[in-house]
Image (cartoon, rainbow, N blue to C red):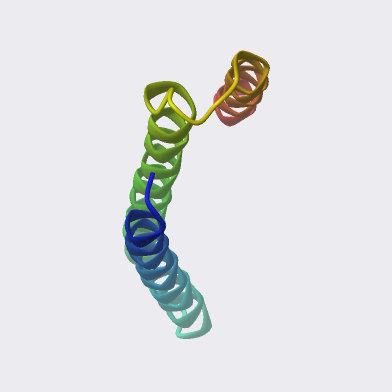
Length: 94
């Protein structure tokens, strides 16, 4: 992956994190305002969806960088990356 592409992906991920932070701030505001449970739950569900999307994007980037771009990676690095990815996915679904 080129440095330019990495920077673009990094900026995209940072923007996602900032949007998620904004959604979490909205949950906090709703709690402080004694909003209804349904309102809090709706906002929390939006946060979870946004975080799930972020995780999917990071996993995709990891796969593309470590498994598709074979020209700059040695086999042992790819095996290690695969093992890390499996651990992350398992921890996410526990």
